[in-house]
Image (cartoon, rainbow, N blue to C red; front, top):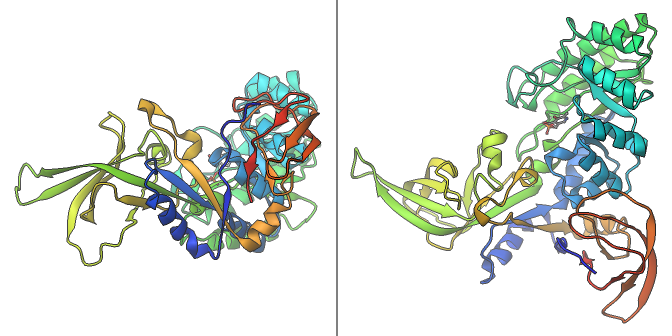
Length: 465
Ligand SMILES: Cc1ncc(COP(=O)(O)O)c(C=O)c1O
């Protein structure tokens, strides 16, 4: 029996503010050399509660691309979230945890043909488009799909603008595309947009929802009766941020432009749900001290840590994130030095912090980086042979008691890493504590991480209690 990539046990904590205690525990272990994450599941649960309170009419479809960790997907699914998938791999992953295709939108306006065929094979009908070639492709491969036209409406300021790549012009292009769809006999059911990831202009949602209204109205003239409005992603998720302002704009715009509650409103939030749940902690394993060429009284400390821009900090390059180092050890009143922080690879580009005043730190000290849950792990590589940090999960007893009820084998379960969904097959589970053996039905996965075949014996599985 092969089981790799087992997830870490969930550590039950007394309160959310005990996360740092867990980080210290792990860092204090003499054998701990690699960087590691601590993910607080309470944070995800709290975010879901905030979403429901602030945007009660909008069903969140979590954008899997943002962080495709199975524990996160399972947690969100158990809370009632739906999912936004961009590829066959993401769809398979979400299906593997038992989510219904009715709760998934295939929100990639430009789709590979094999991915459309896969969507059809599993009955995932709702998908976006923004160009004519896509309409012909879909007519050929999945003519009864439920289509959602994606329009462009960019925030004036966003961490990662998306409009240059996706979204048709709502005035110059959308009407013609809808006419083509009509002529091809395709079933268009609604409109979507994405104002840009990490949106810093809440008012853009009013402009975008107003444009969607115009397109709903135009569609009526073609004989369509749209019933789906998808307001995309863009909601901030770091500590101290809030979706309050965006929610006010969205709620008002929905009342103004879509008072008819029979129109289903969905969104595709990514970073909102996961950014603040993850804290990355890295170890200083080398230090250089250099003197400024022009001013020899100016000393710069260069710290080398065990994760960098080819690993978790790829978010600096791809997601335009600014990261804030927090030394784990207290340095109250200590002298501050110009400091830079570097990743472990041989590349000069591998710089995490360019120049910041920091207290002097010693070899072996640890540095925390909060808000590292979004667009970090799924993009990280093992370039130069450096491992991607492991994730340790924490939850309070109350949250864990709720989540525990959704796992398949009491306190214990095992999880696939990836792979197509297949039929359930009988598997023997041996409980090493009691010598009991149970035969249960589990899905068979033939995935990168592991596979099980009928009659397999599972001796090792993930203890998540
Ligand atoms: C189609 C789509 N939906 C949703 C998202 C998630 O955006 P965010 O993380 O800003 O909420 C993205 C991000 O790139 C996206 O491309």
